[in-house]
Amino acid sequence: MANNRKGRHLTQMKIAAVDPFYLRMPDITTAADGTQDTLLVRVRTDTGLEGWGECDASPLVSLAVYCCPMSHGNIINIRTSLIGETLDAPDDVLRLSEKVRRNGLDIQQIQHAYSGAEIALWDIIGQQLGKPVYRLLAEMSGTSDVAHPKLPYASVLFGDTPEDTYQIAVGLRERGYRAAKFGWGPMGKFGEANDIALVAAAREGMGAAAQIMIDAGVVWGTDYETAYNRAEAFAQFSPTWLEEPLAPDAIDAYGSLAEKNPPVPIAAGEGSSIYRMAEDLIVNGGIQFVQIDAGRIGGIMPSFQVRQLAERRGIQYVNHTFKSHLSLAASLHVFATNPDFDLLEYPAAGSELSQCLVIDPFLVEPDGMVRVKECPGLGVRVDTEAIRPYLAPVRIEVGSDTVFEQTRL
Image 1 (cartoon, rainbow, N blue to C red):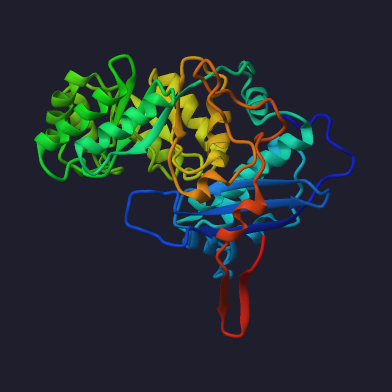
Image 2 (cartoon, rainbow, N blue to C red):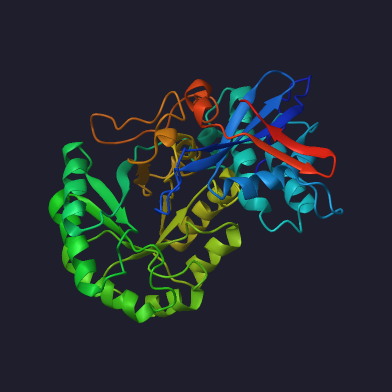
C-alpha cells in the first residue's frame, strides 16, 4: 500500500482519551437480537477531534479488554496502547493496530474488542484530512475512489410462525424494500415442513420480484447433508443465498457442502473475528458470499482486506450489519467503491437504542438505493443525548484500586 505521510501537519495530533461506553435496553431477552445492548468506543485527540466506533460483541467482555490491568508484556490493554500516540495519517491507524495486537498478544478477545477503537481512529483521520473513509482506503490501495449505490436488504428475524413471517414480509414490501433477509427464530427447530413454510411465507409476503435471503443461524452445526437438503427444498423460492447453515468453524463441513454444489448459493463469515477465519471460509469452505462485520473482525482495515480477497477469488463481499447505523457507516465505506458488490445488509428492525444511536442515519433514497455519505470520516454523528438513558453504570475494582468507572457520557 502507498505511503500516506505526505502533507503531515507540523503539529501532530495525540490521542488524549479512549473511552468505552456500555449501553443496554432495560430488559434483555434470549431473542437473537444483537441490538439489545452494545459497546461504543469514543476516541479523542488533543486537538479536539473525536471519533466513534461500535463493537458487535459481548459489551462487558470487550470493555474489559480496554481496561484490564497488565499481566505481562503480552497482556496490555487497548487504552494503554493508544493513549499518547500520534495520529495524523492512515499509516498511523495501521501502525497502531499492529501495536494493539502485539501488546494484547495473549488477550484472546483483542481484535474483536479493538474493532470499536479502530473504526473511531478512521473516523478521526477522515475528519482531519477532510475526506470520507472510503476515499482514504482507495488512496491506500491505489483503486478507484468512485462510490456506487447499494441495494439495501432489510435484515429481520423470522416470525414465530409462517403467518407471522408473512406479515413481516408484507410490511417490508409496503415500506418499499426490494430485498429482505429473514433469519434465526424457528428456522431448523421444528422440522423440514416448518422450515419450508417459513421460506414460502417470506417469498409470498415480499412478492415474486423481490430478493429474499435465508439465514439459518448456524442451526445445523456440522450436518452438511441436512443443509444441502434444505437448500434443495428452498430452491423453488429462488433465495439469493442460504446463510450460515453450519457453525462458523465448521470449515470441513462447509467444504463438503460446496462439493455437493447446492442449488442455492451459500453465505457465511459474520462470525469471523480475525482475517484468517474469513480466509479459511473462502478458500477452504467454498462459500460464494462472504459476510463481514467490521465491528467483529478488528475494524475497517481487516474488513477491507477480506474485500480484496473476495475480489481476487471471484466471490461476492457483503457487509454484516444488524447493529446500528454507526456500524452501517463503517461497513459501507469498506466496499463502497466496488460496483459489483451491490447488496447492503440494512438494519430495518431493532431496539429503540439502535434506532436512536446516530443523528443522521442512512436513508433509503427514492430510487430504493443507499449511498455512502460524502462527509469527512464515517459521515454519521452519535446522538449522545438520545442514548444517554441507555448508559449502564459500570465500576470495576481490583482490591482498593478502581480500574474502570463509567457514570456518564
